[in-house]
Image (cartoon, rainbow, N blue to C red; front, side):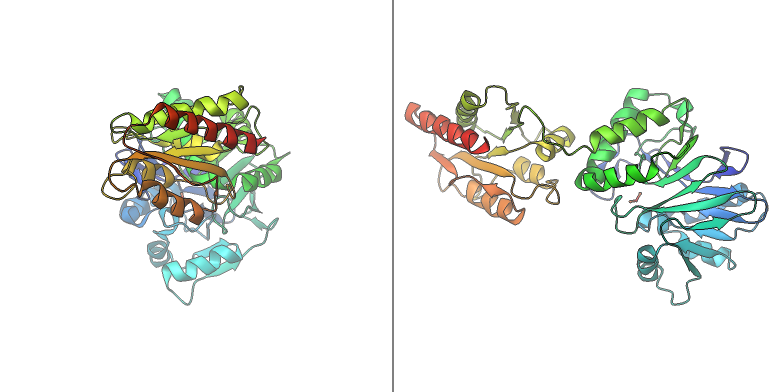
Length: 401
Ligand code: FEO
């Protein structure tokens, strides 16, 4: 347990050894499942719970944070199981607890806890709840990052309980941002968290940030990672979110070319395609991004893929398919915000050449706009093949104008 202010106590769980979150997200710096207690003069509220794996230790932390009081309310800002998993146990431990949440979250909770008699108090956007000398104001913020998401503001403490927003998978013993020992790593974790969790929901991030405009803030208490404080990292995090969430068109255009190449043949085609593209779009950011099994960390490639204006994929064919790095790249494609994104395919093959056809099917499922038929070369490209590849690059670039 850690005291954050006169009336706010931290009772979250530190998990510094976690390296993969939710199966898909690497967490080089561990994570924390943040939970808070707000002690009002008349009532006591818990904000968010914890992962069910940590139920026992969480209850010990919570007991310390409660300081002998019985909690009246559990505010559920979001029902993803990393925060809701321990709620069933909490209800057993504190039978008088009332869950305060919005209607969408309540619907989820009924399916997560599988109890027909959940003690629910449903609130709406802008609703308030008094704890005596402090009050809770609820800010419903759908799709940050689930349909159920809301935030809770305590005006008397100028504290925002922001759910996953402004959070990150970063764990150090001190929960305040003034105690961060490795700021560069923290900044990286904050950005990676935004890209992975909020990247597909940028327009909703903008709406959510608009709802916070004008709120005096001394503290932002997220569901993961350090608590942000005024005078330390709070203003910076707000500014970064505003910048990262912008969806305006970028200039110059970004047209990366992602490829794998076993013997340099697909790589030659990639270079020729690039030459054709920059002939038409000399200012375009047209990075050649080579992927192979050693790439390991895909975060930068995923970010580039999801922020670009158009892209090309090149793959050789191995065992009748595209090679794993290309599938790995597409596994994090943001299909929500990228409908009709222009793309083109190319590759060298030896026997049968199914790679591009298989990738084309996947890109169609992702609602991308495939440009012309895939450009294929049997084995080693000739000068003529490379000229044709460059010509396709110029046609692709013209189509972007
Ligand atoms: Fe940390 Fe969306 O749960």
